[in-house]
Image 1 (tube, rainbow, N blue to C red):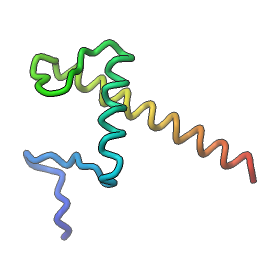
Image 2 (image 1 turned 180 degrees about the vertical axis):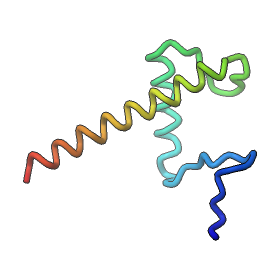
Image 3 (image 1 turned 90 degrees about the vertical axis):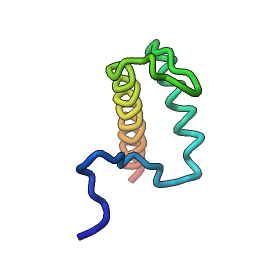
Image 4 (image 1 turned 60 degrees about the horizontal axis):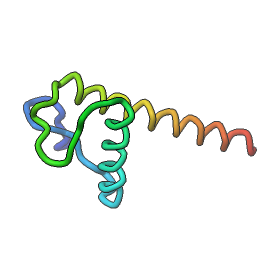
Length: 78
C-alpha cells in the first residue's frame, strides 16, 4: 500500500508544483478580496471556517471554469 493515506488527522494539502506556490498564494488573496473575505497575510484565526471554506471553494470553482474554457478552446481548434 502507498504512503498516501488521506484519513487521519494530518493534512494532505500540498503544492505538487513548487514553482506555483506564489501564484496560488496570490490567487487565494485575489479570490478572498473578490468575495469580501478579509483574508490577510499572517494569522487569520479570526475568520470562520465557513469563510475559509468559501475562499477555497471559490478558488476551485474558478480553476475548473478556467480549465473548461481552455479545454473548449482546444477542442474547437481540431
